[in-house]
Length: 80
Image (cartoon, rainbow, N blue to C red; front, side, top):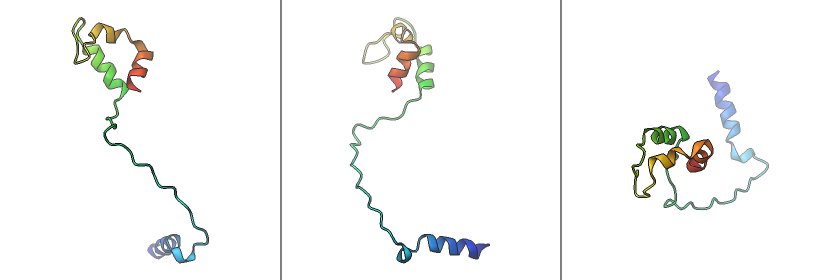
């Protein structure tokens, strides 16, 4: 069984027997400054439920009761 696997892998990666070449376009460099961690909608929803009303939650000065009024569509927009 091991010999069969070895032969299959050898044939698969044997570049001398390849008949066609594949051209690959270079990838664009990503700006690492703009990357932000992925936030799950459930995490944001849990946070909003725990926020106290009439209290600003951070630098944006958005009150908890305003965040709670966003609803499902607003929550989707916020996490996208």
